[in-house]
Length: 112
Length: 114
Image 1: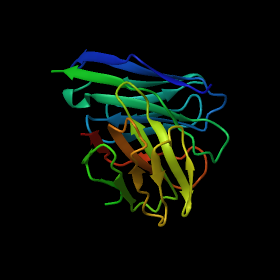
Image 2: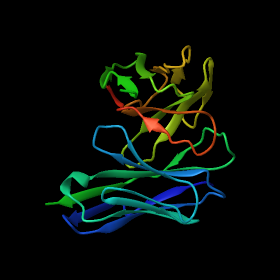
Image 3: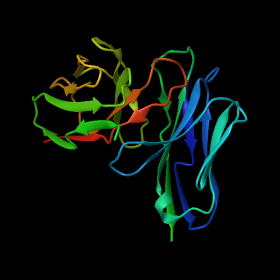
Image 4: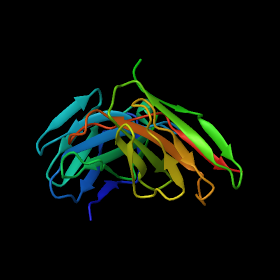
C-alpha cells in the first residue's frame, strides 16, 4: 500500500538550532513529492516540489532534498515565525492520476 | 490576486441539515479537489473533478455531494447522511491533468455540528 510517513510528529527547537524533518514514502516510482507549510486554522501553503532523487530546492532558511525512499526538509537557523506544521505529499504513478497521498505532518515549534 | 477562495470560513450545522461549502478558483486550473482534515490524520480525499460536468468519488465520499458546472467552481454539500461532519475542509486545485503537478489549497472551512 502506498504510504507517507513523517517524523518526528512534533519538534521543539531553540531559535537558531538547525534540524531536519523527514518524509519517507513507500510508492513504486514517484511522480512528485511536495512540501507544504500549514499554520493553525489555515490551508497548506506550497513550499517545494521535487521530482527525482538527488534534487534539492531552497527557500530562505528551508532546503528540501529527495532520495529514492525519503525526503528531508532542512531548517537552518530557524526563527519563531517558522513555527508551523509541515506537510509532505507524494503523487504515485500512473501519470495523469488524481491521487496525492499526504503524511500527517510534523508540528514545529521554534522558541525565542 | 489569483487563488482559491473558500467560504464560509466557519459554518455550524444542525442535526439533519444539509450545508454547502463554496470553493472558487481564478487560477484557470482544470482539476479541483475536496479534502477533509482531522487532527492527527493526513488529508483524506472526498471528491475530485478533472473537468467540468465530471467528478469522481474519493476515499471518503459517503455523506457528501459535489457539482462542477463551471471550471471555476466546485461546491461541496455535506448532507445529513454524513454522521461525523465536524472537521476542517480544504478545497484544492491543480493545473492540467498530468503527473507531478503541484496541488494548491484554499484557506479552508471549519464545519461544526451543533
